[in-house]
Amino acid sequence: MRSVLLACALALSVLVTAHQAAAQDAIAGEKVFTSQCSICHSVTPGRTLTGPSLAGIVGRKAGSVEGFHYSAANKSSGVTWTAQELDTYLANPKAVVPGTTMTYPGLKDAKQRADLIAYLSTVH
Ligand code: HEC
Image (cartoon, rainbow, N blue to C red; front, side, top):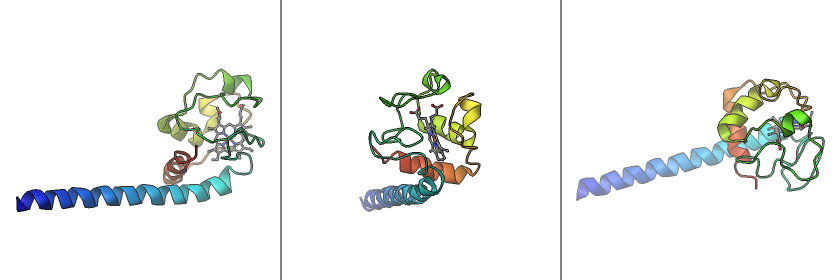
């Protein structure tokens, strides 16, 4: 019985730690967003800047913000922005969507990309 309780306590502390780590990643990711993306993207639904709003971007089909004038390349890319797809795209946008009008060279740091995607998962 005692070992079961111990195992439960251990499992719980691992879960709590994982949760805190995810929250911290999202906080770090918000800073990356502010410095790298917010000049062209908002996270407010429907708020268009140079780029489309990124509210709810994780899991969304490419080119699906109503009223945003996408390039044909982005619109017909057939991509769905899963966390994995975003990771590849943000490292080098032109490699995933050749002909995109997003003039962003890419974010080379994998940890910064992971943090950024953790943050983007929280904006709906
Ligand atoms: C210089 C302006 C600019 C910057 C900086 C920029 N973007 Fe973009 N982004 C755009 C434009 C413009 C588009 C639309 C591209 C098209 O239609 O080809 C776009 C498209 C996107 C898309 C596809 C959206 C969709 O609905 O299909 C994602 C995802 C994205 N950007 C994420 C980011 C992230 C995350 C950053 C920061 C690392 C970033 N962008 C930085 C201008 C920018």
